[in-house]
Length: 284
Length: 270
Image (cartoon, rainbow over all chains, first blue to last red; front, side, top):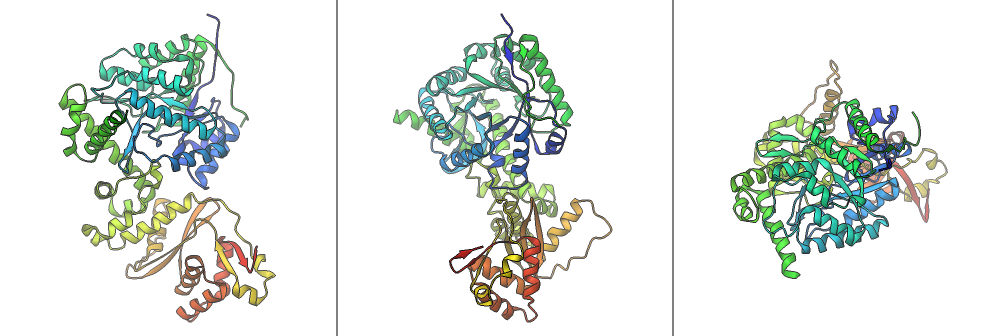
């Protein structure tokens, strides 16, 4: 197989690291933030994101649309996202394959639902409407789920493959989520990889999880584990060049730890393909 | 199709009830594969996440209240508030606007009678933090105005500007906690807890500021910002509430702090 281009790795940009990232401009491929934390008219956070955007491609990662919620009121949320997309001009806009609100209550969490053809029709309609409003494709992320439904008619991988066909959306492949689910439900993560449409992967998430009495919990609070690094290598060997992202939300360490994780992801990419240079657009 | 979508809605309603309370678990468990006891524990993990997310949002919006009550008491307040008034928006930063009203009606908080008004002040600060960035009006805007035109003019405040009145010294309490949080020592000032106080919140560039206001200054800005009164009517009203009301100093403060956005005169905005 001839070497394929692999985009350089990014990091999740969180408040404690704002000052150092803007000052030192580390060599990373892009930064990602949670869209909802910038649904503002103005202020310091939005200013920081605009400054980051001057130096890096930005990925806007949503955590609040809850696309599979049957009766959620999405319109205002979509409009706020559209305003932010217009302002930031991100490289990626992504959301999760989950539900989160019912009967007027929002749980502000990423909740699993039974994968059925009916749910597929609902989510596909929502993704199409979102893409129409934003006038761009969005990426949908596979979920870490701790429970599974009896009346699921298909796997999450098959659901996502169909969603890609129905909407033309991209995939945000979260390898830690894939791994956590496989371990918790006693399946092989490679099976899910085989069924997911690799050609649609536009971004890859890497994160750590916690090992608890109930199984693995997706905490984004530790280093990426060896098994997940192995999954990244497997994805790279399949010719996927989409950039990876180091996601770290709880117990946030020093920036250097994130940069070292990003460098490790880059090395794995370089082993399987050709690292596609430095996408940072201005130097410190 | 209709019944199938209803099945999805039914699953989400059962899930929601199990997230609101452990009493909702029995109706949810039959929908899940695997061991029921383990699933019960996992639903508990999800339930904990929902409260933790609400707690993170309120901790961000109400840091001074959290310092006043202590962490454990604040966590308990959040659980009670979340049980009564859960989030309704996918943007968690909007959650908690009614926290002060909840505290008003929550009997155990009576031992901290100023807490609800401190919460009101903190919500105004929270809102101002993300208000639109604007260029405040400079003093020269008043220079060309004839007295009659000024009297009839309406002043418009910059985004984030807010006024609060309280039977408690909420501005002093808030400012003291900022000094404590900044690690200032030795120059702590005594707060007279019996003192009523008016507070003003505004954006100074990207920072949010809080200060106390005199009775007259509060009456003046409340007439302008809340009632939409003309400059002349606001002045007359303020002079009636405070004998020594100093209009020039009040306007100087507004310009120095950047409270004014624009002046609307008959048919003109400047």
